[in-house]
Length: 345
Image 1 (cartoon, rainbow, N blue to C red):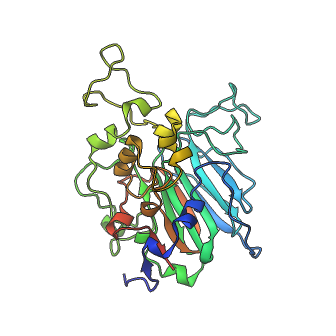
Image 2 (cartoon, rainbow, N blue to C red):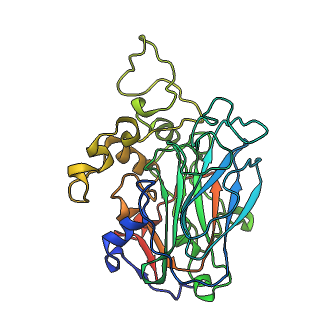
Image 3 (tube, one colour):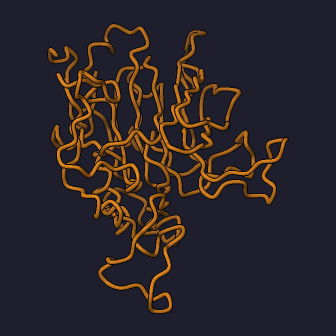
């Protein structure tokens, strides 16, 4: 594949404030001002490659979102949503949900992770923990910002793919620089040597062997199964010793589906949540959770001020795919290109 004609820049070309504005650390965070846009809509295709049924959801913070805000997705299914060109919001998946015929949870909280008020059709952001796909379609300078976020914890593996959507400039961008993936579940992780999803001319997350995705090579099946700290697991396995866990955290098998709370979600401390006197990039450092999450998913947001190693920026107008349980390994796109987020202009 020929090199993309668009120029690859580093994050220094954008201000930290513009990226921080994109990242939705707080559901009450103000969205970007509404931009002038035509009547066209932008597609978001949500795919469930998990072995089980999941319940995806979408929350709109700016612009116009779809009428469908939550649904049941069978394994292997695709759902196409249409949003406005100035849309800002997030997509996530909920697990182990039970709803009555009217789409309401029987016991108030309908899902074990990602629940949104016990409703099938979400009216607000989901409860942590949940792996998020976050988007700002009409960002500063005519650019779209997007990322995978583990700031609210982790429940499902997730990937984002960019669709040029008929835009010739976007079609020239190498998809191996735009399609991040986060696989931090042992049940979905490829552990057999070098990961190569391109055999027999296959494509993977919109990429081919001529320009493959850079996958993380540091994590092993053992480290993926152990990355979430014991105290942050939603359902820690029973251990010997009357609940006293051994150190180091080895020797106890963890489940394939092992949701993880962030330290901020679990404890609400200012230093973990980057609030109060820690509300700046200079004063807020990665927590023990954030450091572990970043190792598991190098391209994902791990705490509120993780902008420089987590944000993808392309010209506005693209459509996107959100793929749950993509399989394989996490990508390390940003790390493979050097310091700073991936920015196309």
